[in-house]
Image (cartoon, rainbow, N blue to C red):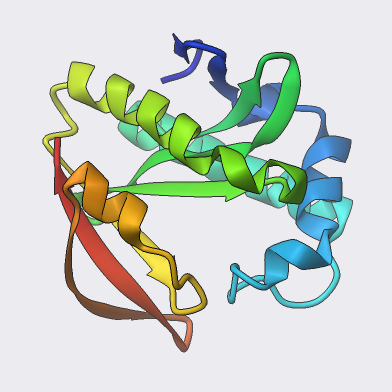
Length: 160
């Protein structure tokens, strides 16, 4: 996925994104509303740990979360990451980019359709997410609820 471009959306390795951009993004209180696992203030050390963790996924699986740009502007991070036997799609947008989720997800799914590892993709949405039509339009179906670190998420599956 690194170096993948679709339209104006470009995916790069997360380590290529300036740490200050990720730290500022993750420090924005508007993100915490939809990231129940994000608690307390975010630090540069947490940014370094996040990037290192995402790089471990790349090393282990050959694919992982990326930094995402729309045009020349950093929009957030996410992509496909292996969780157990499943490939999960995650997207954490900068608050000023919240409206770009569909555009970025379409670009990511274009990549998924070209990668033979990604026959199905899961999505875990926090209970705070009330607008689920976009997933329905993509063809994703809710298959249940899951608990992560004491928080409940809706789980969806999409056959790509």
